[in-house]
Image 1 (cartoon, helix red, strand yellow):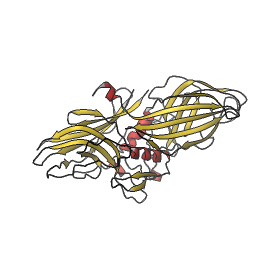
Image 2 (cartoon, chains in turn red, cyan):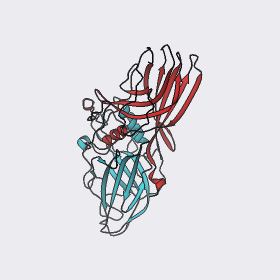
Image 3 (cartoon, each protein chain N blue to C red):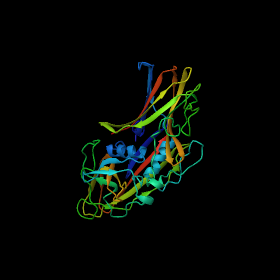
Amino acid sequence: MTETEEEHEFMGVEWEVEVRDADGNITDSKKGKNSLLNGMAYELLWGFNLSVTDYPYDITNAQVVPTWLTLGNMCGMDINGAAGDVVHGIMIGTNNTAVVATDYKMGTLIANGIGAGQMQYLITTCNAVVNASPRSNLRVDRVFTNGSPGAITVKELGMYVLISAAKTICICRDVIADTAVAAGSSLFVKYTIYITI
Amino acid sequence: MTKLVATIRIGDKIIPMRSPVSNFMYLLHAAFNVNGNANVIDTSNTARTVGAYGGYGWVGTAGGTQPAYGISTWGIQVGSNATGVALTDYKLNTQIAHGVGAGELKYSGQNVSTVVTASGANRSFKIFRYFTNDSAGDVTIREVGIVMQPSTSGAVPYPVLVARDLTGDIVVTPTNAVPVEFTWQTTA
């Protein structure tokens, strides 16, 4: 197998951010490829192979068994964070320390709220699968609004999922160029997970 | 950046796994929506609703059970048709049947490995199965696939193709066996 062939990704992830001012005008946008973490791989591997005993690490850095036994779903990865929810869904932070595969949480999570340095987390939406050969895409997005008194600079993005009732794992984390969100502005973050035939 | 990659070893040949199909994404969507369902197409080309209870193994079933010897309706499958892969594929184009007749191969039981440390922080695991030719003539494999059995609220598992790849001609001569092995791994 050649080097090029070997690098064919089974699954890829892209991110995109848009900053909108109070009038809804886009004032900044960026996009890039995701840094998939071991957490995502662990979870997928668990879903593929229930005899796996090498479990993912949650955001407290504790190894946890990914079960949704009460729901009968042993590989559930609940990503549908509600408004204000900072334990699952898309997350943002202020730490631009480089990503490593074993990252298990955001560097410095921005808290939900309207105080200094805080942003309001709206709901995370997991959209329907869109097939556009050769790709099949699954987009997850979330809007964050800055109701604080000052500008906030976002430096990292990520996704958290619940893999059991109270266990959160970080499935990906990305460091982005400084993205300032002025008071009264909002940040729209989109992650697209895709496969390519 | 860490990537999730997969490879297929068939006999002595190793090729990248390129072709998860749209059913795979529907199941992933269901996993993200823990209480949601996935609307997939099973191998009989029938729309099925799975996923709310569908975590019972993407390869195995509840408890990690794998397809046994002679079970060819799910697990790793092989076929003889080299038609290109489409996102909407729901079965192998021409599956090779289990048996000892002309053009048939015997399907072994399927096995899986536990996750192992591949290198540094990387992780990987394998599923594999043997195909033996006890027929009188050569049998040529040209496609391989993985069929899962996600369970459903009615506890009726439907076979769902999640990946199909072309292998090039792999000739299995009489009395010989060929292993087919899928490996998933993270890689830096």
